[in-house]
Amino acid sequence: MSEAIIEVSQLTKQFKSKTAVHKANFKICRGEIFGLIGQNGAGKSTLLKMIGGLMYPTSGEIKLFNRTVKDSHPYFERIGILIEHAGLFPHYNAYENLDLIAISYGLTSREEHINKLLKLVGLDASNKSKVKNYSMGMKQRLGIAAALIGSPDVLILDEPINGLDPQGISEIRRMILELNKAGMTIIISSHILEELSKVATQYAILHQGEVIEHHSREQLLLQCEDRIEIEVEKASSAVPILEQHLNINHYKVISEHVVYIYDSHIENQHIIKSLVENGVTVHSITKHKQSLEQYYFLARTGSEGDSHD
Amino acid sequence: MINIFKMDFHRFKTNKMIYILLLIFFAFQIFGIYMLKTYEQPGENGGMLISTMNESQFIQVIMAQTPSWMLVYIAVFSVYFYMSEYSSGFYKNYIAMKNARMYSVLSKILITGLFTLFMFIVMFIADMIGRSIFFDHAALGDGGYLAKLLIGQFLLHWAFSIVILCISIISKSLIASIVVGFVLSLNVLGMVISALESLVGQVNLSSFLLVNTIVSPRDFHHINDLIHVAGVAIVFILLFSFIAVRYKIKEDLR
Ligand SMILES: Nc1ncnc2c1ncn2[C@@H]1O[C@H](COP(=O)(O)OP(=O)(O)O)[C@@H](O)[C@H]1O
Ligand SMILES: [Mg+2]
Image (tube, rainbow over all chains, first blue to last red; front, side, top):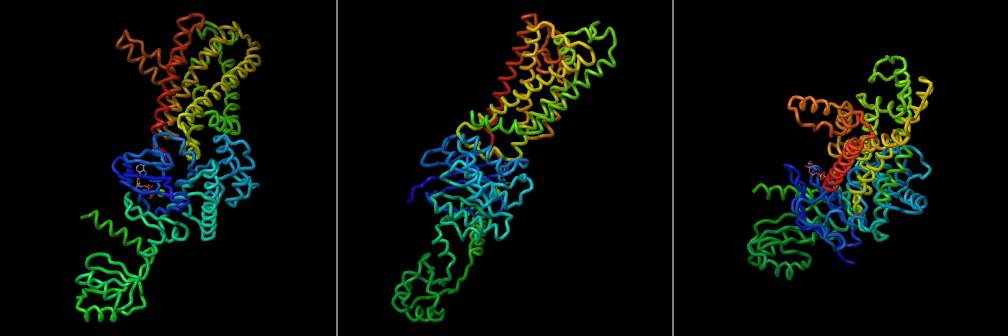
């Protein structure tokens, strides 16, 4: 199952004075829902445009389906994209727009295919109103239908939930999960981690053009679990005490001095007492509670600190 | 290629704007002929009366006028057809397919050629109708000569549409492209360069300019004139098609 179908290495995009994406590395495997998180201007759209074949990288490499991509490539045909705004003619209705795309793909039974897609995204095939009169949510859904016309293996959705009401958001989420269940690999970007946490299986955080973290869903949730962080003289001498005296099994040694404990039922004083009694010096102990948003915020500010050094 | 052309063609034939442009052109062409009748002065046009001209002579008189309305319509259409797709972002739906960037430009070139052809047909019909109404005759004259004239001028006009298409692709601006199209239709460039040449003497670059070639009456009986017209048209068609395709292939799309 874990065959990488998209792989980017050292991918960089430089606009005149601005590096929009800087040496990004990651892999996306078949069947994943890959969440790309980053603030406005982080470089999400630029990154996705390079993967979708709209923009050329300044340097670095993109591999699609195990082939290195150069210029105009048939592998792009297996990728459906909805990047930034859906590309639709405002003066045509939904059906006419999809029909034009279907013609460009050389599809034969267009009508059947289009009606199926319209149904999938929850749009009324008999609605003859022009796309310019559509609501944001309807345009997004039509954009997804447009991206699906060529029956792609990979679907790229750039901020598909932007500007939608809660009902629209949950509908799009349901649609994404449904498509994924049917075997489609999906890349979805957002500036709100919470939004993706409900669907994505992998996450990459993009900040000022750099991929600063890359996690599986489990790892991410682990980061955000409640924990006790202790700072001691020597972590290696603290561990046996935690295990034997306090019966703590769920912990992680972070560094020479720092240990995270995930058994949150244990009292702080209890830990201090046992450690001190057994001759381990404790420098600090803190209970740590973190929401996804806090975590995301910290990851960003952390990387900012680094880059200013 | 064929699929992308089919798509553009589908958009072409289902677009009301195109029929409206052709209709307005038709109306103005008839109106223009009426005005010619009203203000006709004996002794104009090298002593020849419009009422005694055949279709070839008539076309050359009309085409020598600037701004060339024909060129203005062609420019408006070329800019519109390209920019409406570009600014809607519709190209995003297919442009990543193999060679789609090149095909998309080639297909636009064919479509502007088609529009140019329709313009010529409308012009011809309007001339026939207008001349028989206002001048009581619509003689075609030498059929072979007329055919050579029409084909030569068609190629030149098509080349013009490609130049404008190329400008739209590179400038990405509707307004700028239309303005440039209009200025070119006035043959401003041709006049400026001719003026400079008359100062310098010896050189004759301006006769190879596209719009200048369009507005200069020629004798299509002469092989030199034929070669000149065909040469200018083909060079411009190839050169600007090439630039447009190259640019599109390299372009970072929004
Ligand atoms: N075509 C472009 N030319 C110049 N700068 C650009 C272009 N596209 C994006 N940028 C810049 O690159 C950065 C990343 O933009 P973008 O990829 O759109 O971010 P996001 O989608 O995460 O909001 C921004 O600072 C933006 O201003
Ligand atoms: Mg964006």
